[in-house]
Image 1 (tube, rainbow, N blue to C red):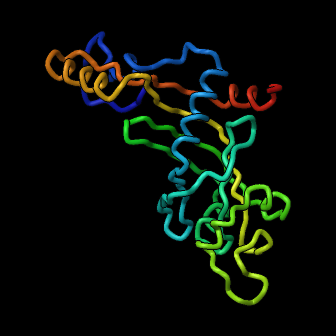
Image 2: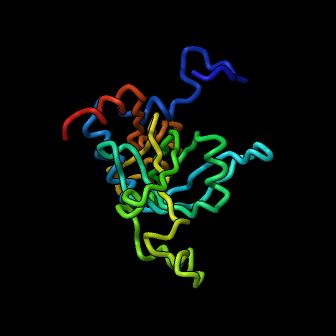
Amino acid sequence: MSGFSNTDTGSKPSGPYYDKNVDNDVPLKEKIEAVSNFVSSCKFGMMTTRDPSGEKLVSRCMAIAGKEGNGVDLTFTTNTESHKTDELAADPHTNVAFYDGSGQWASFAGDAAIETDRAVVGRYYSPTLKAWLGDLGDGVHDGSENDPRIAVIRVRARSITYAVTDKTLLGRAVEVARGTLTGEVAAVNKLREIGEADIERWRASPQ
């Protein structure tokens, strides 16, 4: 429950959307598979880091390179010379958020590590990285998997929150319209939370 309040709603919840849409009474496997499939369909996420020079939060669009930890940990390729590597080295706490046009979303809060081992880089390398790093013509910084600028960011999740739906766009629109007319809270999403203990249990489980 929030510690901030500027209203008294008596015995009724002041934030009924959560109560109407929360859907945690499902098996952990179903929770993980649903969010993993959603992330794969999005392909891109917004990674938030903290700029140590001014304590600003900065978000960047990142392409998913792969998943680890039975699907709960995310990997991304990066240029080691970019600001985000400096920011993550100073403060590894990060959040990666995903969203699609239907209003579904996911938020991964976790800790990031920068991996420069060439075997790891090779596992997640894509030739399209050349388009972003270029070939500097020195025989070393050529955009290949051996380019020392290329590293992998591993995000080890500590908590995951997401909202998915099995309703069509029309079905959701009907729910919102009905709520607008009647004041009844719209049931449009399956809002789910996966805590650190469940994530650790899932990582350790045989798949």
